[in-house]
Each structure stands twice: as C-alpha cells, then as structure tokens.
Image (cartoon, rainbow, N blue to C red; front, side, top):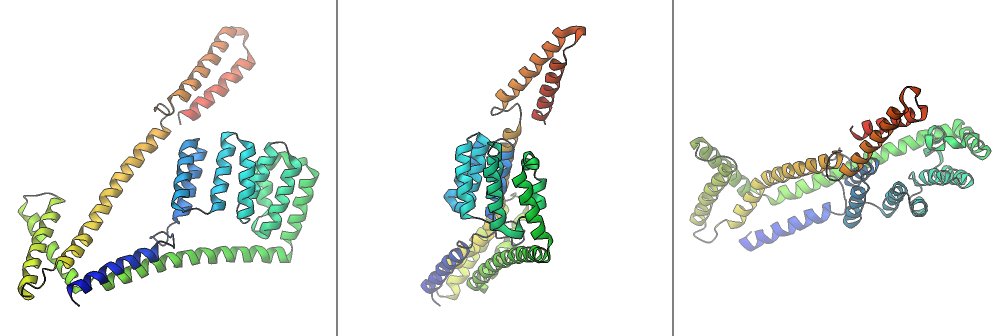
Length: 354
C-alpha cells in the first residue's frame, strides 16, 4: 500500500474507533462504574454537603454532555429544588421523573416530599403507585424503615397499604418475584460490564490492525535511543524521551529514504509512533494536573474558614457566643433553656468544624 493509501486507512480507522466508542457512553474500564453513575454520585455528594451551586453546575454539565437521561436529570433537579426549599418545583420535577422512569426512586422521594408538605393522602397514594409500578423490586420493609415516613406510622391508609404489600411479597409469588428481580439486576450488571468490555476490545483490535510492524519497530528504536540518552545523564525526564524520539525518528527517516530511494520519508509512520509514545505521558500529566486542581477545589469547598464558607462559620460562632452570654448572665440561678440553646449551638459548631 502506498503512502496516500496508508494515510487514508489510518484516518478511517481512527474515525471508526471514535464512532464506535462514542454512542456506547461506557467507561473504558469495564469493571468500573459508568460515567453517568459517577456523575450522579458526584451530584448527590455535593447536594448532601450543602454545596447546592456545585451540584447545579454538575447537573448542567451532565445535561450538556448527554450523559444522563431526561428522567435522571428531572429526579436530581427535583431533589436539588427540594434542598433549596422550593417544594412546589420539586414536586413537579419528581413527578415528571417518576413518569419517565418508573423503576427509579423518584416516586418514593415524591411521597416523602408530599408528606413533608403535610399532604398525607397524596403521600400514601404516591407510595401505592410506586408499589404498583415497581412491584417486588420495591420492598415494603425498606419503605417502612425509611425515617422520612415515620409520621405515617399511625396512618390507617399507610398501615393498610403496608399490610397488603407485605402479604403479596411474603407469598410464593412474591418470593419468586423478588428472586427474579435479583436475577434481573445481576444480568443487567453483567450485560453492562460485557458491553463496556466489548467496546474496549473492539477499539484495541482496530487500533492494533492499523499499527503495523513498522510503527512497532520505530517505537522500540525510539525507546532504545531514549535509554542511551538517559545513560548520558545530560537531560532529565521528559526531555530524555523527547531526545530519544527525535534521534529514533531521524534515523528512521534517513533509513526510509535510503530503502525507498527517496520515494518516502516514513512521515506517517513517525507521526503514529510519536503519538503512541507521548500519549501515555500526556495522559498522566493531564491526570495529575486535574487531580491537583480537583483537590484544591475540594479543600476550598469543605474548609469552614474558606472564602465560600467563612460567612456561615462566623454566624455559627456568633450564635455560640450569644448563647454563652445568656448562660453567664443567668449566673448561679441558671437558665435551662439558655443551657439547652448553648448545647445546640455548640453541636452545630462542632459539625461545622468537622
């Protein structure tokens, strides 16, 4: 194959690899969690820490990249609206998420929100619909143990619903349904792992079919030259690799011209080998830089005396000081309410300081 043919084949192969991997939206590490799940975990972690703006930003990034389905986005936005205190918007978003993804926990979260708004009948109705949609996949004991539904412990409608669901799930068909649900979940997990593994193997196979013996030989030549430059002790990394690659590429270029009588300089082979040699180094460098930046951002987000959290920390300290003055002014006579308020403020300060 001539120079133009090899160039066209290489370009076509790269396009095929990229196009085959993109729609799968799967992690390149087959045993890791999917990118969508990682994004959901990051959003949930930010929301639980009270970093609502950070959670909103992560959700916007996920929506722009298309990593999350519409139902997942609506579910997370509903929980975020709930955390911000906008109960009406949260109820609307959670209802929309439950309609789009009945198998999710959106309907259960919706019931908890409705109960928090003192709408017991709507909460019980939402739970009944959740059991109807999810069947044995939603265990009655899990709902009963959820502390959010503790106010329904004396609600006749809730107790009757739990009795019905427990009876259905405790029978032979219920036990069979639970077993089938577990098997189905295991099969879905295995299918996801196999899908991601297939993407990786397909990409590696196509890449190896494009990288021929000349590229492999040039890579070994560059690594040998890098070893020689390193032995001289004149340069440090990564300049040893740069110099070794330059020497190996120059030798290959001269040899290619001699062998082909100046018909080819081996530029495409050199370009491919250089890309493969420097890709790991660039990936490691970018990863280290990203990790350091992420660590700085994480520290600033959780530092109680950082710029983002200083105002809140000072408010907690002022509350402790104010309640402490009340206890001191009460003197020996004592003020039980002031002491209780001081204990509460001190506990809030301890939580704030980690």
